[in-house]
Image 1 (tube, one colour):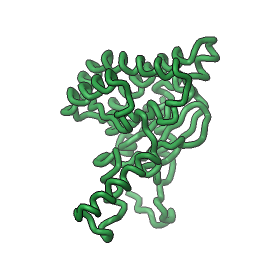
Image 2: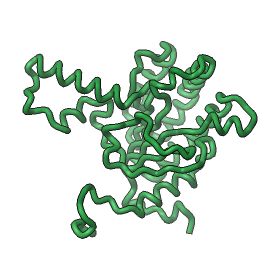
Image 3: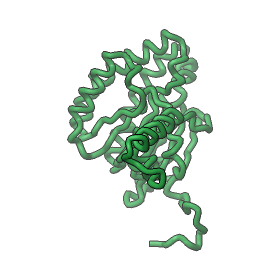
Image 4: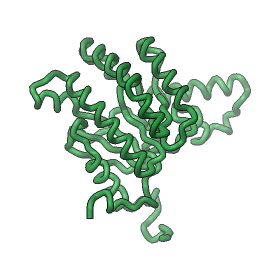
Length: 248
């Protein structure tokens, strides 16, 4: 039985988040520059997105560029932004064809104007698509996201729209970038690193973590299936004991 056949489609994670790591190291193994790795990584974004859509995953969030990534060499950052611009233009037809809605989380104010323009147009053009939401985390920081949510809530309290007694987990959740999007149930990180790197710090509280040594440009459909099968073989207790879980 193939890995895909082992997947129980009735128990799919509704939301998968992926830290796409290892492009640079993969490129070095090929004797090429880091942008070569990022370019090949884009191909895996397409195949992974299409595989998730085919299976029936409802939300896919990809950690594309963190706030810390701005500190990388200027040539690499510039190359990444150009690659992002080209990819958005090239893949819009694919998003529309596959009924995928594009969404963006992060601080878009610091992205190049051309990138922001293309992103906004792609977001608007795919707004009515319903099969899957593809969420790109760009210039994203989990700590910054939570900080911004706190500031928004403080402002609401000052304006009299919210009282202190109303501040709870739901209120915080609804003031995050991901408001209206269910928390990820499965986090995948490639390249062998075993940390979340400031990604979705609030939202990953009860996600299952899956770490693989495979570099992102080598993350093919079979690797995705392997992660989902592993997820489905885990017992998700949410603080309860095994005996308390209701078996359906």
